[in-house]
Amino acid sequence: MANKIVTEETRKQIGKTGEIRTYDVERGAIRRFAEAIGDANPLFNDEREARKTRFGGMIAPPTFCRSMGSPIPGIELPGMGKEFRGLDGGSDWEYFHPIRVGDRISVQTKLVDLRESEGRLGPMVFITMETTYTNQFGEVCVTQRSTAIRY
Amino acid sequence: MAKQHYIEDIEVGAEIGPLQKDPTTQQLVKYAGASGDFYQIHYDKDFALANKLPGVILHGALKNAFLGQLVTDFAGEHGWVRKLSVQYRGMDQPGSKVICRGKVIKKYSEHGHHMVDCEIWLENAKGEKTTPGSATVILPSRHSSAA
Image (cartoon, rainbow over all chains, first blue to last red; front, side, top):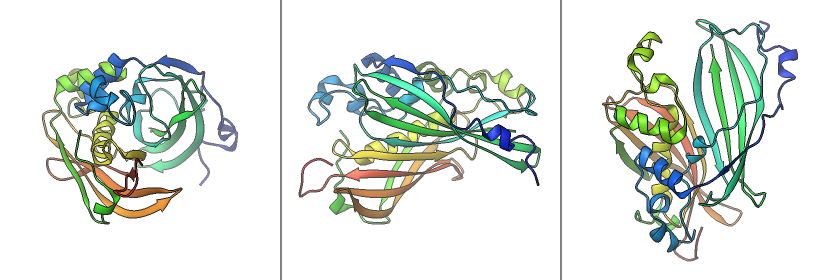
C-alpha cells in the first residue's frame, strides 16, 4: 500500500539541517545535571577528585547533551496536522571524545530518515534525526540519533 | 570512584548492575530544569490526565540517563562508554522504583581496544522491561594502561 504522508516528494527533505547552536559548558551545569539524574560519580561532580583521573578534570555524563538543544530542521509533512500526537521513540548515542568543563560545543541536527507505517490508529510517521556535538577543536565528541514518532 | 572492572575479569553472561532508582515528582522537576525539557506531561498532573495519560510520567531521556549511569559505573574511570542505545517501549510513573540491569553478550578486540557489547534495560517494579537498550563499553586490561 502506498504511503499517505511520506511520499517520494516528502523524502526529498532527508539531509536537511537545522541551524547550529553553540554552548559553553559550565561546571555548574554539569553538576546540576548530575544531581538531577541522581548520579554521584565524582567525574561529574567533584573537580578535585576528577583532576586525579586520566581525564584531568570534570567531564559530562553521557546524556548531558540533552541539555544542549538545537533547532530541528523544518520538515513539511503534508497530511499530518496538529491533531497528531508525538512520542520520543528512543536514542542511539556514540561517544568519541569527552565533553569537558570549558568546552565550546557546536550542536547541529540533521534529518536522516523519514518512514511511515500503518498503525492501529492510522498512519504513523517515524522521523529520525542525527545531532552532532562538536568541540572547539573541531572534534566530533558525540552523535545522537533519535527517533520521534507522530501518530 | 566505583570499583574498576578489567577485561580479564569479565566473561560473556556477566551481569551489570543492578542500579535502583526511586524517581519522585521532585526529581522530574529537577530534570526538566537541568535538561530544558518542559513538556508538561512530566510535571503537570492535570495536563497529563487531559492527554489520556495515567498521571505524570518519567521523561524517556531521564530513563536514558539512569541507563547511562549503569554503564559509566560499569566502565569505571579507566573504561569508556562508546555506544549507548535505548528504546522507550513503556511508560513509567514517579513514586515507583525502577531498576537498571544489564548483561555482557559479546567480548572482542577492535582497533586495539578491549570491548564488550551489553544488553541493558530498565524494568519497573513488576519486572516489565519498559526501556530496553544496548551498550558498547571499552574496558582496560590488567596488562596495559588506560582503555
